[in-house]
Image (tube, rainbow, N blue to C red; front, top):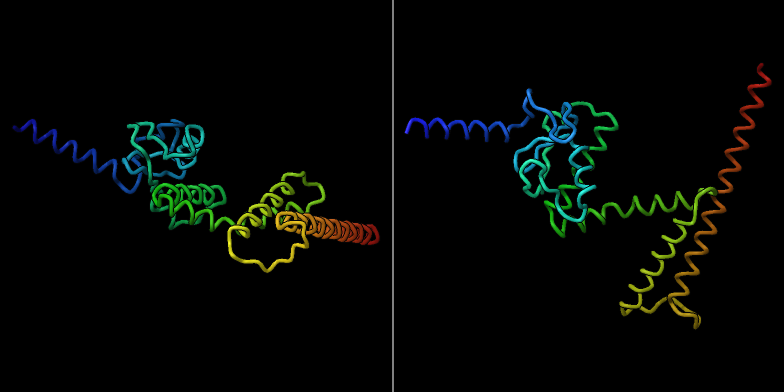
Length: 213
Protein backbone atom coordinates (compact mmCIF):
# COMPACT_ATOMS: atom_id res chain seq x y z
CA UNK A 1 0.00 0.00 0.00
CA UNK A 2 2.80 2.36 0.96
CA UNK A 3 4.65 1.42 -2.24
CA UNK A 4 1.58 2.26 -4.34
CA UNK A 5 1.30 5.68 -2.68
CA UNK A 6 4.97 6.35 -3.36
CA UNK A 7 4.62 5.37 -7.02
CA UNK A 8 1.54 7.60 -7.37
CA UNK A 9 3.42 10.56 -5.89
CA UNK A 10 6.35 9.95 -8.22
CA UNK A 11 4.00 9.90 -11.22
CA UNK A 12 2.38 13.14 -10.07
CA UNK A 13 5.79 14.75 -9.66
CA UNK A 14 6.80 13.54 -13.10
CA UNK A 15 3.58 14.88 -14.60
CA UNK A 16 4.07 18.25 -12.93
CA UNK A 17 7.61 18.35 -14.23
CA UNK A 18 6.51 17.62 -17.76
CA UNK A 19 3.74 20.21 -17.63
CA UNK A 20 5.84 22.92 -16.01
CA UNK A 21 6.16 26.37 -17.56
CA UNK A 22 9.92 26.00 -18.05
CA UNK A 23 12.02 23.11 -19.34
CA UNK A 24 13.96 21.02 -16.80
CA UNK A 25 17.37 22.47 -15.96
CA UNK A 26 19.08 19.11 -16.19
CA UNK A 27 17.49 18.12 -19.53
CA UNK A 28 18.28 18.73 -23.20
CA UNK A 29 16.38 18.76 -26.49
CA UNK A 30 15.65 15.11 -27.49
CA UNK A 31 16.21 16.01 -31.17
CA UNK A 32 19.49 17.96 -31.23
CA UNK A 33 20.70 16.75 -27.78
CA UNK A 34 21.80 20.31 -27.02
CA UNK A 35 20.55 22.99 -24.65
CA UNK A 36 17.09 24.32 -25.39
CA UNK A 37 16.85 27.28 -27.77
CA UNK A 38 13.36 28.83 -27.94
CA UNK A 39 12.03 25.95 -25.79
CA UNK A 40 8.50 24.82 -26.60
CA UNK A 41 6.33 22.34 -24.73
CA UNK A 42 4.08 19.98 -26.66
CA UNK A 43 0.52 19.20 -25.60
CA UNK A 44 1.83 15.83 -24.38
CA UNK A 45 4.28 17.57 -22.04
CA UNK A 46 7.64 17.06 -23.76
CA UNK A 47 10.06 19.93 -24.36
CA UNK A 48 11.87 20.64 -27.63
CA UNK A 49 13.74 23.46 -29.31
CA UNK A 50 11.16 25.35 -31.35
CA UNK A 51 13.21 25.14 -34.55
CA UNK A 52 14.02 21.45 -33.98
CA UNK A 53 10.44 20.25 -33.63
CA UNK A 54 9.30 22.38 -36.59
CA UNK A 55 12.07 20.98 -38.80
CA UNK A 56 11.18 17.45 -37.64
CA UNK A 57 7.57 18.17 -38.65
CA UNK A 58 8.60 19.56 -42.06
CA UNK A 59 10.71 16.51 -42.83
CA UNK A 60 8.11 14.00 -41.63
CA UNK A 61 4.74 15.17 -42.96
CA UNK A 62 3.77 18.83 -43.16
CA UNK A 63 0.17 18.00 -44.10
CA UNK A 64 -0.74 16.61 -40.67
CA UNK A 65 0.25 17.27 -37.04
CA UNK A 66 3.73 16.27 -36.00
CA UNK A 67 4.09 13.04 -34.09
CA UNK A 68 5.95 13.46 -30.81
CA UNK A 69 9.38 11.82 -31.14
CA UNK A 70 9.18 10.75 -27.48
CA UNK A 71 5.69 9.25 -27.19
CA UNK A 72 4.26 9.36 -30.79
CA UNK A 73 1.35 11.51 -29.57
CA UNK A 74 0.04 13.94 -32.19
CA UNK A 75 1.27 17.45 -31.35
CA UNK A 76 -1.54 19.91 -32.03
CA UNK A 77 -0.27 22.69 -29.75
CA UNK A 78 3.20 24.02 -29.00
CA UNK A 79 3.58 26.24 -25.95
CA UNK A 80 6.71 28.43 -25.98
CA UNK A 81 8.36 29.13 -22.66
CA UNK A 82 6.44 31.97 -21.01
CA UNK A 83 9.54 34.08 -20.40
CA UNK A 84 10.20 34.35 -24.16
CA UNK A 85 7.21 36.65 -24.61
CA UNK A 86 8.37 38.94 -21.80
CA UNK A 87 11.97 39.53 -22.87
CA UNK A 88 13.50 41.31 -25.89
CA UNK A 89 13.68 39.03 -28.92
CA UNK A 90 16.24 38.93 -31.69
CA UNK A 91 15.20 38.23 -35.25
CA UNK A 92 15.87 34.49 -35.08
CA UNK A 93 13.76 33.99 -31.95
CA UNK A 94 10.95 36.12 -33.39
CA UNK A 95 10.89 34.02 -36.57
CA UNK A 96 10.69 30.77 -34.60
CA UNK A 97 7.85 32.10 -32.42
CA UNK A 98 6.03 33.25 -35.54
CA UNK A 99 6.36 29.78 -37.07
CA UNK A 100 5.11 28.21 -33.84
CA UNK A 101 2.02 30.46 -33.89
CA UNK A 102 1.33 29.44 -37.49
CA UNK A 103 1.65 25.78 -36.56
CA UNK A 104 -0.82 26.18 -33.70
CA UNK A 105 -3.23 28.12 -35.91
CA UNK A 106 -3.07 25.39 -38.52
CA UNK A 107 -3.70 22.37 -36.29
CA UNK A 108 -5.28 23.76 -33.13
CA UNK A 109 -7.77 25.78 -35.19
CA UNK A 110 -8.56 23.02 -37.68
CA UNK A 111 -9.93 23.94 -41.10
CA UNK A 112 -11.09 27.36 -39.90
CA UNK A 113 -7.62 28.08 -38.57
CA UNK A 114 -6.07 27.05 -41.88
CA UNK A 115 -8.40 29.36 -43.83
CA UNK A 116 -7.75 32.24 -41.42
CA UNK A 117 -4.00 31.72 -41.82
CA UNK A 118 -4.21 31.83 -45.62
CA UNK A 119 -6.43 34.92 -45.57
CA UNK A 120 -3.99 36.71 -43.27
CA UNK A 121 -1.05 35.77 -45.50
CA UNK A 122 -2.76 36.87 -48.73
CA UNK A 123 -1.67 40.56 -48.55
CA UNK A 124 1.95 39.53 -47.92
CA UNK A 125 1.74 37.03 -50.79
CA UNK A 126 0.47 39.70 -53.21
CA UNK A 127 3.10 42.18 -52.00
CA UNK A 128 5.85 39.59 -52.55
CA UNK A 129 4.63 38.95 -56.11
CA UNK A 130 4.50 42.67 -56.92
CA UNK A 131 8.01 43.21 -55.54
CA UNK A 132 9.26 40.29 -57.60
CA UNK A 133 7.65 41.60 -60.78
CA UNK A 134 9.28 45.02 -60.28
CA UNK A 135 12.71 43.39 -60.10
CA UNK A 136 14.23 43.34 -63.63
CA UNK A 137 16.46 40.40 -62.64
CA UNK A 138 13.61 38.17 -61.46
CA UNK A 139 12.74 34.90 -63.16
CA UNK A 140 9.39 33.90 -64.70
CA UNK A 141 8.03 32.30 -61.53
CA UNK A 142 6.11 35.39 -60.42
CA UNK A 143 4.74 35.90 -63.94
CA UNK A 144 3.28 32.40 -63.90
CA UNK A 145 1.84 32.98 -60.41
CA UNK A 146 0.04 36.20 -61.32
CA UNK A 147 -1.34 34.68 -64.54
CA UNK A 148 -2.58 31.71 -62.51
CA UNK A 149 -4.18 34.15 -60.07
CA UNK A 150 -5.89 35.88 -63.00
CA UNK A 151 -7.22 32.53 -64.22
CA UNK A 152 -8.66 31.80 -60.77
CA UNK A 153 -10.34 35.21 -60.76
CA UNK A 154 -11.90 34.46 -64.14
CA UNK A 155 -13.26 31.14 -62.82
CA UNK A 156 -14.74 32.88 -59.78
CA UNK A 157 -16.25 35.56 -62.03
CA UNK A 158 -17.90 32.89 -64.21
CA UNK A 159 -19.34 31.18 -61.13
CA UNK A 160 -21.08 34.39 -60.01
CA UNK A 161 -24.12 36.03 -61.60
CA UNK A 162 -22.09 39.19 -62.18
CA UNK A 163 -21.69 40.39 -65.76
CA UNK A 164 -20.25 43.92 -65.75
CA UNK A 165 -16.90 43.38 -67.52
CA UNK A 166 -17.04 43.91 -71.31
CA UNK A 167 -15.31 41.01 -73.05
CA UNK A 168 -15.60 42.09 -76.68
CA UNK A 169 -16.20 38.52 -77.76
CA UNK A 170 -12.77 37.19 -76.63
CA UNK A 171 -14.02 35.58 -73.44
CA UNK A 172 -13.61 36.53 -69.80
CA UNK A 173 -10.62 34.23 -69.36
CA UNK A 174 -8.68 36.04 -72.10
CA UNK A 175 -9.67 39.42 -70.63
CA UNK A 176 -8.24 38.51 -67.22
CA UNK A 177 -5.12 37.01 -68.79
CA UNK A 178 -4.49 40.11 -70.96
CA UNK A 179 -5.06 42.33 -67.92
CA UNK A 180 -2.49 40.30 -65.98
CA UNK A 181 0.05 40.64 -68.81
CA UNK A 182 -0.50 44.41 -68.98
CA UNK A 183 -0.06 44.67 -65.21
CA UNK A 184 3.16 42.64 -65.45
CA UNK A 185 4.52 44.98 -68.16
CA UNK A 186 3.64 48.08 -66.12
CA UNK A 187 5.29 46.71 -62.99
CA UNK A 188 8.37 45.68 -64.95
CA UNK A 189 8.67 49.18 -66.46
CA UNK A 190 8.28 50.69 -62.99
CA UNK A 191 11.04 48.39 -61.74
CA UNK A 192 13.37 49.39 -64.59
CA UNK A 193 12.67 53.07 -63.92
CA UNK A 194 13.41 52.66 -60.20
CA UNK A 195 16.61 50.78 -61.01
CA UNK A 196 17.80 53.60 -63.30
CA UNK A 197 16.97 56.24 -60.69
CA UNK A 198 18.90 54.26 -58.09
CA UNK A 199 21.93 53.91 -60.39
CA UNK A 200 21.87 57.65 -61.13
CA UNK A 201 21.78 58.39 -57.42
CA UNK A 202 24.71 56.05 -56.77
CA UNK A 203 26.76 57.68 -59.55
CA UNK A 204 25.93 61.13 -58.18
CA UNK A 205 27.05 60.17 -54.67
CA UNK A 206 30.24 58.61 -56.04
CA UNK A 207 31.03 61.80 -58.01
CA UNK A 208 30.46 63.94 -54.92
CA UNK A 209 32.88 61.76 -52.91
CA UNK A 210 35.53 62.08 -55.65
CA UNK A 211 35.15 65.89 -55.66
CA UNK A 212 35.54 66.01 -51.89
CA UNK A 213 38.78 64.05 -52.11
